[in-house]
Length: 391
Image 1 (cartoon, rainbow, N blue to C red):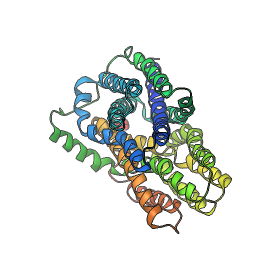
Image 2 (cartoon, rainbow, N blue to C red; image 1 turned 90 degrees about the horizontal axis):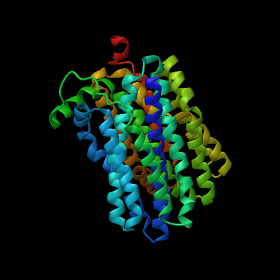
Image 3 (cartoon, rainbow, N blue to C red; image 1 turned 45 degrees about the vertical axis):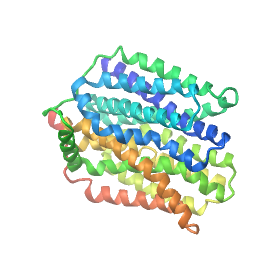
């Protein structure tokens, strides 16, 4: 009962966090576009969230081990709530860049602590299910976020106010939880000891961080680069939105089933399979890229296959690294996701610019095939199942 109550609160917070992230991307893009801000500056502003994550990531493990999960979630949630509430105060490019940076730092603290807490108390036979539910709730929140964009027509401040109130409500529930600490054999008391932990975690679980990179790359390139590619092929803006929603819907549909399958058949087999089939589905998308309906179907199928790579990657990491390295492993999952999110629009944009006669989807399908093959080749090495060892 205690675990269920704690789990419910943690995934609810993650859903609200996903909602705020999903709302900010299109909302600020629309506001800036209406205000005459160039597309390149618009894109630069959007990177602030991921820059915030990368800046704070190396320094997160020490406070988590010292103060426990609850204080980190409270600080992270407080930063997100405060930043959202400040958006309506002053509409300026660099002020909003700073606020998005704050949200990146707050979101990373919140996600890092909740991910590590969930992976630490989940029994091995329910790890995939629990992490997939974590991903499912974030996905539902992220998909619902863009629905706030039309409110900008009523009042520009309204979406930010609604989102900050929701964050405040979710944040309040964290205070009822009892604080806990991660397992640890060594004290993390300096930046160099953190780097040493990173090296150890990479040694055991590097292959599990690739799916989180893939998910970050997918999410950012599909939302950032695909609309440009689609508009150049004369697809309507409404069609682009519909196609992208297909991927989000697909990932929500199969998030839990794939998590349950990974508990039964193993994370490596499920990841290899979905990544290879994802390669097939995005290759198919290149043949139907002039059809809105064809793209919607291929994006729906692709979402059902590879929309769970982040949560499956976290579960796979938890299978591979020693239990005392779970905080470090979760940190690295976030770092690789952010690297993928930063690389996606840059590589996608360059590909569209310099390979005008080649389908944009080939770069995605090639990446999926490469990671599927890498997991096939190296996924069995250095396997460490701490849950079974300690049970």
